[in-house]
Image (tube, rainbow, N blue to C red; front, side, top):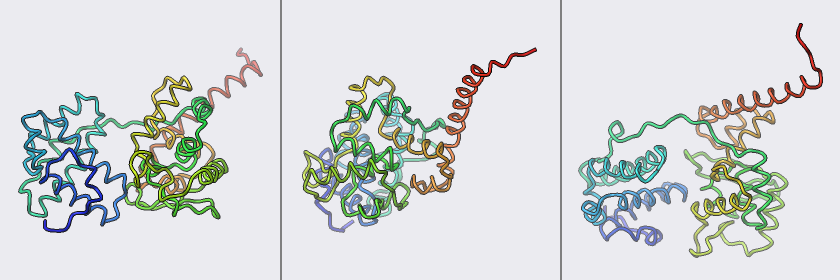
Amino acid sequence: MDCPVSSRFEATVPFLNSISKQYALRYLDALEARNYPEGTLSSVVYALKSLTSLLPESRRAPIVGDLTHTTSQDIAVFISAAQKAGLAPSTINLKLSHLGEFFEFLRENGVMTHQPIFRRRHRLLTPTTLPKPMDETDLVAFFKVIDSVRDRLIFLLMLRCGLRVSEVCTLTWDVIDFNDGTARVDNGKGQVDRIVYFSPDVEQAMKTWRAHKDPGKYLFPSRKRKGLPITRKIINEMMGRYLEIAHITKHYSPHCLRHAFATQLLNAGVPLEALKELMGHHSIHVTLRYTQLYDTTKRRQYDQAMTEIEKRQAVGGR
C-alpha cells in the first residue's frame, strides 16, 4: 500500500493513530476515485468510529493503533455493545458491511491476513418493516412552524423530490437546472443516477434561497466546517427541534418525508415503474414495499368513505 494519501480526509479520522489513520485515508481515497458519494465516505468513517469507541479499553487501544489487529471476537463484542447502546439491527448490519469492505481492501492490499467479519456468524436478522411515511396532519403542522428558507427547502426536497438525507446534504448548485426545473443525482444509493423534478413550492424556495446567499459549491454548506456540506446529524437535530415546536409526539426521522413522497405519488396514481425511477431504487422489489402501505391506505380510505355513505343512506337490514 504505497499509494499517496490525500489530506482531504485527514480531519475526519482524528480518533485513529498514525498507522490506522493511513489505512483509513487510503481506503477513503480509493472510494472517492471510484466515484462513491460523500454520504458513503461519511458512513465508512462513522463505522470505524463506532468500532473503536464501543470496544472495551483493553482492545480499543491496540485497534486504534493498528486496525489490522481486529479479530472476529472483537466484531462479536462490538455487535453486543452496539445492541446494548440501542442501535437498530439494520444500522449494525450497515456498519458491518462498511467495515467488512474496509477490511477486505486491507486484505487485498496485503496488509491484513484475515477477514474478521463473517456474514453468517455476525450479520443480524432484521425484521421486515413497512416504510413509515409522515401523516398528512403532522406534515402540515411540521412545515407550519418552519420559517427558515434554508430549513424549509431541505425538508421540501425530501417530501417533494424524494431525495435521501445524504443526497440533500451533498447537493451542489452545478446539478440544478432552473430552466427544466430539475436536479441530477449522481451515484445515489446502489450507484443509481437519476433526475428529480421540482414542484412549484420547491422551485420557489430554491430561487429564494439562492437569492439570499452567495452560491458556493453546496446548496447547504456547513456553518462550522468550511468547504464541506451540512451533515445528516445536523438535519436530524433540526427535524427533532421542529417536531418539538410543532408539538408532534410521534417519532419521525427525515427519511419519513421520503416515504411520504412515495406513498403520496402512489395514492395519486403514479405507476410503480415510474416511482422506482423517481425514488432511485436499484430494484423494483424495493419499491414494491410501498404497495403494501398503499393497500393499507386504500383500506383506511374505503372504511372512512363507507362510514360516511352509511350515515347518509341509512340503509337498514330486514
